[in-house]
Image (cartoon, rainbow, N blue to C red; front, top):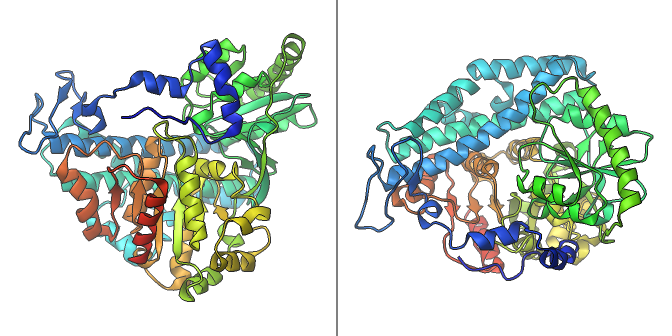
Length: 562
């Protein structure tokens, strides 16, 4: 693996890299370079620590198949590597949902739509027990029946994930059997995401497309700045916003849902540079969950004297009490910080319109634009940052190539923050990025539609809603739609599970960097040929090195085959 020559495409982040070097502050890029060369067995998925007899490894060479103590060969190790990532990602979505359900059930919020909230809570409990949920039954009947026939539709969240987890312990299943279990876990994660989004809407109301500011310029010098890091209970975020109302407290986010009606949280930065905001001297307090939060944040917080409050603690107490204490502590920290030190806030920020729902999109016009050839297809952009690439560069370059070639681009989560930092979510800048056909479609949808249309947080399931609605409007199966998914800078296990359930829906999906499965030819063939046969789509694990424009062309060629 080569060293990353340029660490970030974001000038606001680059502003602090020299200071970090001069002061000996270790950031994510430094730790990556210190880890090189990375373990080839781990990179190809040919290592195992699933029992206490190892660790064991195999060899990627065609004429060798060294087995572990229990007899796992390279194909079992490879498919288990994929299964492990999918399972971890699915558990992440279940964790978010269960935390939210517990808070709503305990009466920690007064729902906006009380009866709908009760109905969805009942549906969630039913799904956890026996898999029954209207959320997944909204998928086209042929797709739903396909999942049932293959027995990958989750028959109860707990049972499905318990069974999947035990496949890592051993057993005698084939690579194909194990892949099907992985897709069963993936669909459980998909259901959890959809149900979380619907519960959030019932409790807080429909957010709708809203203007959000992104990048370091959203930090303020004359107020306390609280940054919400990662994914944690929306009820706590809501209470913090309420406790800060009317006070000189600015609430922002990193890797978190920016919309919680009636509140909006500006995005300071995205995953790859999550440590850097602490170097500004303007952060009064960090409130951090577990998901999408680097442990290194604690070291940086200690170095720059920034308090950190963990949301995932035992005996947390009442949400309202914790929220009040967080705001009070942030105010105290702000006054101390203002007296002791200076602040360095780059004046770089961009406006973005984010959080479009299916109600905002006139899908009939999208289908007509496809039929008339105004647009060449639809690409879903997802994922966050990966230190193996220059931060934001891959997704921005791919998006710009697609837009110039009249491809309708949708995004979600951290991918949207990357795109927003460079103006691709600013409606006022869309003409500079889009081909004529795409520009015609966007103009017909409305003046507030940017070049790339954000479908909200990865917590909400709006992408699934879009695919269901598009299939219904176009009167086609999802696998017949001219839609491709692309993860240009994927990082977390939750990206892997999203990629897996997208393939299960019949959407070809491209994933970078390559997954740790390449040591197993059978696993690679399974994610390609086997998935093509079962779902009508492949999970493309691309191993060859290529420029972003080549990646974009690869995606467009896949659209042409739909």
